[in-house]
Structure formats: structure tokens, C-alpha cells
Amino acid sequence: MKKSRGAVVAAAIATGALVLTACSSSSSSESTTTDSGSGESAMAGGDDAAASGGINCQSGTISASGSSAQANAVTDWVNAYQTACPDATIDYQAVGSGAGVEAFTSGQTSFAGTDSAVKDEDLPAVSAQCENGGQGINIPMVGGAIAVAYNLEGVDSLVLTPEALAGIFGNTVTKWNDPLIAAANPDATLPDASIAQFHRSDSSGTTDNFTSYLDAASDGAWTYGTGKDWTAPGGQGSKGSDQVIASVESTPNSIGYVELSFVLDAANSKAALIDNGGGAVEATSENAANTIAAAEVTGTGNNLALTIDYTVAAPGEYPIVLVTYEFTCEAGLPEGKNPALTQAFLQYAASDEGQASLTETGYVPITGDLLTKVRTAVDSIQTS
Image 1: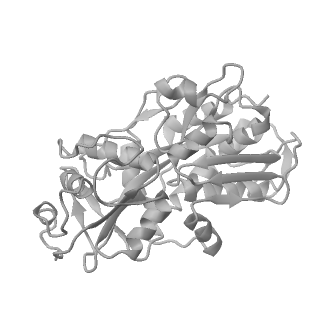
Image 2: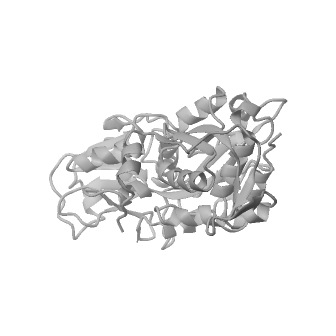
């Protein structure tokens, strides 16, 4: 399935930044709850309205930055929120998870988007801007499949195992007709061509999740550890998910890893099927949702950090997944960072309407008990 998002959004993604502005940016604290279907509004009153799709309109401006994997989702949320609430301005810069967390820590933004949860031992340092002893919390908001995108003429379906992926991205498998790849693709005509491998050059939660998968599932074939920064030899670095897919799109015989929504936009690239040992599984939102649904909450209180099992091998469970968190102060977000608008925007993102929009752009919505916890965590953000 391909999708088109329009020239304006495409241009914004291509630059690695989403800078979306509304008609005005009043500093007033007045709020209204808007029914996005009818356009009618009333004075704000209920979390129930926000959960069901009503938008709690707040005015003013917030800046946020981080994960490029969630950029397409945030675009839709910002457009919807600002259309309903023209006195709000939300500026999200898709600079990568690492840079986003650093910007939040240094007090530049109201929240950070990160594809890997801030670890317990790092919470005090990352929460440095939270006033009066407040601490930040990880709020899972976007699920997704990390697609292994490839550009290989004549190969419409490609199956890759974790061992083959570890070799490709560890620079020990360098030809497309390597026996590790050929064994999983007996019916494909694989060229005797060098593999052009692309990885993230910036600090990235997508890299953290991808290397965590390789480390967990490849039975020791991946020896470069895990983390947001790429450490394996070889290949070429590209900044942001948008530039990785652009590199794959423009380079024959290439491969890279990006959030699935970027492949759905692509013209020349396809997503490989992944075989963890239980059969080849397609990278789809539905298959990723099956894996994410089994994730375990390992954080405490409203800090909803998750642990994902990357070794799943059941049919219909796509193993390379990520969950993007919005990280902000539960208490002590400075008044200048507009905590009321921060909370209201995240309430919309966690609403039925906000989560439903994710499936239209190739993401996985948060559901069930976890979504209930997400809404509780967002509602816990102190706004004064």
C-alpha cells in the first residue's frame, strides 16, 4: 500500500524538520474543548471529551523535537490540533531522538520524542529543566514497524533472517547473492552485486531499537552492541529517517532501516520480510501491533518505559518494532514551556481520534490497558 501526503508535508519531511504554525499565538491560558467533527466548542471540562476525540484547546506556543520516525504521525496531530485551535502553535523539529532528548534537557523544548525510553539511571540528568524537584516521564505514544527497506531491481519479495541482517549491517555480508541471503530466497534471482548499506549517522532511537533486535535475535552474529549511535564498520550514514529512505530510493542495490511509514511513501523501495525462525513475516502495522501488544511496562508510576521481545517467532508477529515516547516533566515543566498546551496536545495525541489516525500513515496505535495508562500519565502532567 502506498500513500501520498502532499507536496508541503513532503518538503517538510525532506528537510528533517516539521515547523508548523497556526494563525496566532496568544499567551492566554483560556481553554476550550472543541468537537473536531462539528466545530462547536464549549469551555473545557473533561478528560473524557479529550479521550473520545474532543480537543482541549489551549493557546500559545510550544517547541518540541526528537524522533524522525514519528514525524509523519506528529505532522497529522499538529495539523489537526492547530486547525481546531488556531491560537496554538506547535513546532516539532524531527532532529533524531538523541538530539531531541538533549534539547529537552537543556531547556529548549516542552517535550522530546524518543524511540527508546530514557533509562532510569538517566532520568535525573534528562529531567534537569523540571523545576522544584520534578522528574520527567516516558509516555509511549506511537508504535511502529522498523522496515528493512531495499532497492533491488527484479526482486519483488525478499526474505531476510537476523543472521543475514547482522552480516549486512556488520559488513561481513557484502554481496546480494551471498549464501546467507540466497538460502532464504530460493526463488529469487539475486544479483552478484555489492550491497550499498545505509544506516543513521545521527543519534537515533530507531538505531537503538534496530541494534537491540540484531543483538537479541541473531544468535551472536551481531557483535557491535546496542545504542542510539551507530558503531559497526562499513556502510554509509544518512541523517534522519527521511534521508535514509532518500538514500535507498536513489541508490540501486541498496538497503537501510526506517520506520515503515517512510517505505509506504517510497517509489523504488520495498520492505523485506523478516524470518525470526517461525516463517517470513511482512512488515505491516497489524503484524507490528501483535508484537507491541505483548510489550511489558517496566517503568514505575506514570513513567511507562516498555521492554520489547525482539525474538518473537510466531506467525503474524513482526519482530523489528519500536515505540516512540514523548518525554516531558510530570511536574515542574517551566511556565515558559507552556505546560497547559503541552498537556492538551498530548491529550489529543492519546485520544481515540489521535490514535486512529496512526493507522492511516502506517503506524501502530497504542491500545488497551496501555492506552489507559498513557492517558493517566498525560493527565498527571502538572499545568500550574
